[in-house]
Amino acid sequence: MADFLMPALGADMESGRLVQWLVQEGDRVRRGDVVAVVETHKGAIDVEIFHDGVIRELAPLGQDMRVGALLARVVAPQSDQAATAAPQATHQPSAPQAYVPQQPAGSAGGPAEAPAPPRVPAVTPAAPALVPATDARILASPAARRRARELGIDLAGLGAGSGVGGALALADVERAATQQQAPLPMPVAPRESAAAVLAPAVAPLAGPARRGFDPEQMRQAIAAAMGRSKREIPHYYLASQIDFQAAQAWLIGYNRERDPEQRLLPAALLLKATALALREQPRLNGFYLDGAYRPGAGIHVGWAVALRGGGLIAPAIHDADQLALPELMHALRDLVQRARSGCLRSSELSDPTVTVTSLGQRGAEAVWGVIYPPQVAIIGFGRVVERPWVVDGQVVPRPLLQASLAADHRVSDGHQGGQLLAAIDRALQSPENL
Image (cartoon, rainbow, N blue to C red):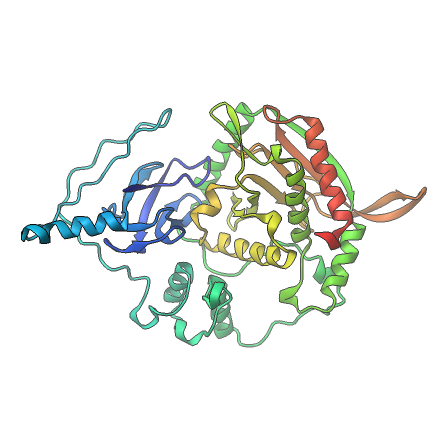
């Protein structure tokens, strides 16, 4: 038997509210399944489970629960079968069991739990209203089903989706809603337009406000986390100017013969170059916990996304160093859209190993980040600007990009930080190899 606990969705989260179960008592679950929706100051997050088995003892909805509180239990299939077979062997009818909310055992150094709530009568969880009977067999993500229900869209009429195995994704539902509201196609910039090629990677997205989003509460949480970071982490800062000519020229050539949805944005190159550089300098990819450095299990780059109404969130693109550029671009577009519509997964918020923030083409020329604990580094990119640059002894105009690094002096020093920025520069000078 394994405990399914309230996850920590970032260093600034202390508690969350369980607002929806996407499974019922006795359902079989597998690792990676989205089983619940938890509301935090970042919005309503789809929470995944990391155990295989049969889910039992679902916590009641609507209550605030601290990080580490018990949400449910997962029983191994063999144990569950044995438990149900025992009453049959003795020919005794099984009696319904009263549900008793469980409190987790306090972890070392963790916050004390609130007193256990009173016992409540036996509860038979109602079937979640998320999956209508008409589309129960249609492959679709929980977020897509939820959004389709909100918009009154029949999933059966959408055909195959853009997800794995043809599953319908949130983007497919949003696209269908947009087509219904505005059937005329949007004009597309000419393929030769460099402005279209170099558009900002994080473009504003249309759509309703995110579920459970309180801008003031998020701002307070960000301030608390950043204040803690500046107090506890000995930051050091480095910066480097990068000649973006080769990357920009390659990008324009790559995109010239491709449809808009297949084009790459500069953000994809910056992400891949950073991920490959972190392979060379793995010390900057990990966490500082309990007085010691712990390397990241993979290179999971948290991409900073500015939210409508204020606030910032940095969900992870997992194994970014292993993704081809088109895959990375698709993952980035999907992540930004879901971040702004409040449909992120818990794993995307709980395990970024480093953060990257890019100001795109509309921001300042440089950014100096604050490390998000327990991470040990944050990499920043300003906007590309044309400046005089010396090439082969001659001063010529060049598109320049400033890359910055803020890192934890308890884990690394300026030598390693400088090598990271140099590795990013080298990767961007050979964009065809990314």
